[in-house]
Amino acid sequence: SKGMLHPAIGLTYAVVAAAIAACWLPTLILLYVGFNMLFAGSHRDKTATQLTRETQPVMYEFVDQICDKLGAPKPCRIDLNCDFNAYASLRRGLFSSGQNDLVLTIGIPFIAIQNTEQLASVIAHEFGHFRQGGAMKASYLIGSITQWFVTTAHAGSAYFYWFGYLTHALSGSLSREMEWDADRHSVQLAGSKAFEESSALIERFGAAYQVTIDNLIMLFHSGALVDNIPRFMMHIGRTLPASTVRRIAESTEQQRLDRLDSHPPTRDRVKAARAMNRPGILHLNRPATDLVDHWKPLCERITLDFYAESLGFDRKEINESHVTPLDELLRKEHKLLLDLAEKS
Image (cartoon, rainbow, N blue to C red; front, top):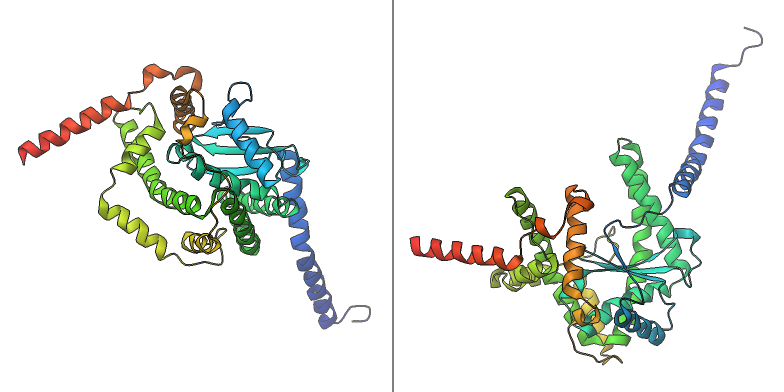
């Protein structure tokens, strides 16, 4: 009838409106994510123990010297936790100034397996990231957005998973280039040999750490808590069967790059370090645990913090009386093996 739009014209308007909305959708979603991230604030690792210059002068001096040699900014704080990892981060996220607002976090299992040269190689890698300035902040922003998408998807909004997948895929190339650059700083400081040795230890004891966590859960269900997680991991790593060690090495050699990987394959990184053939400028072959004053009691305290966070205990209600010394557990294990041998 007169005055009514032809259906084809109405359909055209609807299609155009939908196309415009589709173009603006990613922008609106990013604004929504940014708003949520801004008011969510930064979340500090609750299990981390903050080291101070007054109580841990040797560790801070060690890290300061690495920063001086690399020309990298010094961290405002060094934290220890019970993860098998080491990483650099911005203390206040995107609000950090970048120069004096950086945090170095190192897992005590990571320190336990290495000597000072090998640990210096790892720390130099992390401070190589500190030197990347804008790239590090860009990576932090993309990583935070990806994490928000994934967390929201797990909470029930599966629609956001695809946006998380997309941002993760887009950030992969930048992340890998940042890793190659940080590796160069690591090799220049500690040398090709220390880089290769550290990489081998991380592969071997990374597997041991996973076995350790599985064993901790099993022991917890049987009513026992080990008093020192790094020592337990060291015991497991040193007693891995030769066949398991061989499989770990073979798996490392067979690694292939996936476009979603944030890090290049270890095999390729070690090969690049060998090709650089650098002797390094830091030579101090002592156990890395010597850098931390009161190492054993500190490990035991961080172990209790780990249990409180991971197993749901109230930290105020768990203390040394709730854990079993590792030596006692190993004696019981040894006796059990002897009994089984006699029966067989």
